[in-house]
Length: 175
Image (cartoon, rainbow, N blue to C red; front, side, top):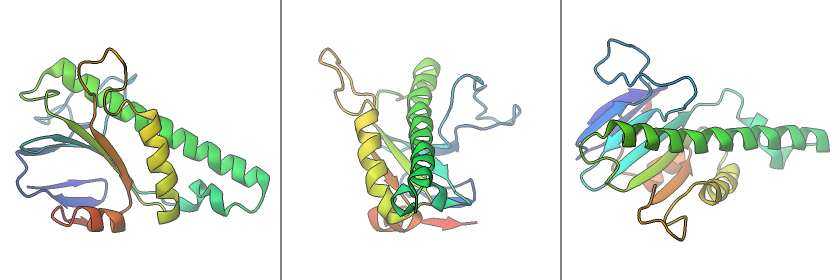
């Protein structure tokens, strides 16, 4: 199953469904009527055993986030603030999409495990930091002592190169 979003084309062999979740056209069959107060991921892919939430960010100035390469304290602070804002956006997109799908109650969702994949066009060195921080911030796994269900079972932040290595069966190309 092929789908395009934000300048990329994905191929998910074996997928049951794949669609742009944050569809903006009111006449589109997958329009969700997203609230301005809530955020949504770019793609939802229904696999036989789990659901993928996929967020895509193609940065025109990726160095604006690389606080490790900053040459001054002020620049490092500014870049770190950009990363913090990005993390906040990524977390809210996951949570809000999960809530939308819970409220809509599509078949099998959110009963299937949810995996969150963030495709970001950032440097490999920054991906490790973002992966660690996203895992610490999201409610992945049994996040509370009284929880009976998981909101998500995993998350990963990848760039196109890491996507190709991690998911060789799910091809990705720029369009």
